[in-house]
Image (tube, rainbow, N blue to C red):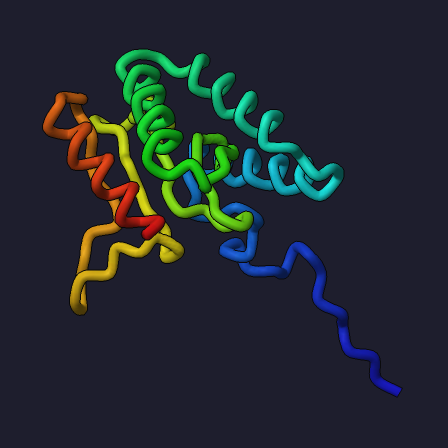
Length: 157
């Protein structure tokens, strides 16, 4: 009887390596998200605990990300009190019924030249067949604040 040689791990293609193609920052974000999911599964966090975690994460941010995230937090609380603050991929996010509606990503997170305010498909921003879901933030002025407040109101409307 002939025996066939069994493939070994050594024979596996290199592209099958875990994490291939991701940057260190992307891997760190994915690991942060996995930790967040585990923490949520272990215990039902109260709104106060989740908000404390978000505020602590904002406090760790360098400027100008910190001041923009603080302003966004205040805008969401004032204009969409039904949204619950939570951490999402290590960044502040705001959810309805556990599903993230909007989030803030500081420029420092992936060493980009601007912070990002993003909206998920749970946001009610539909406008025809195409609409923006992410916005670059380089500075925070009264004009941007008014526009962001309107977007947040519309997202939960």
